[in-house]
Length: 127
Image 1 (tube, rainbow, N blue to C red):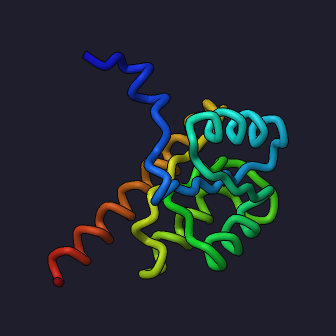
Image 2 (tube, one colour; image 1 turned 90 degrees about the horizontal axis):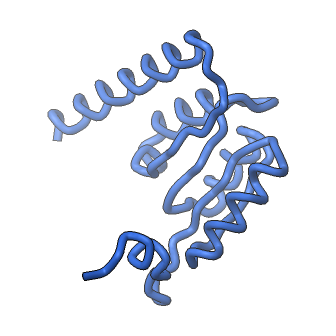
Image 3 (tube, one colour; image 1 turned 90 degrees about the vertical axis):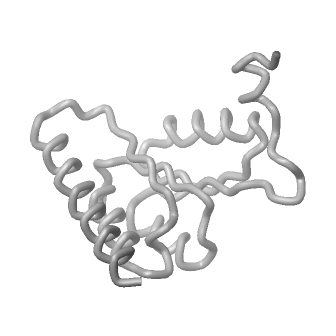
């Protein structure tokens, strides 16, 4: 039986190495994520703020986005709203990263998730 650790450390097949875009204004966080993800065999790209992240997605859509919540120029919630509102990028999975623990941030994230879920439900019932 394969252990959980060995299954996780198995690199993806070489014909399709997934690309993960890391959007975070903290260099240390970006560096740690890049290090670990490349150790697992993923390709990574980085953006230092939300707008740079959107520009990166527009030029080369990733397979997954890891996005900080609080950033300059455009925060993570804004990134999610713009990407999920665009038919070309709405299906890219996004994982939000934050060390924030305040209630306002949690409520805002849940409201955004609800809106996205409702929009996806509306799209699937129309097709």
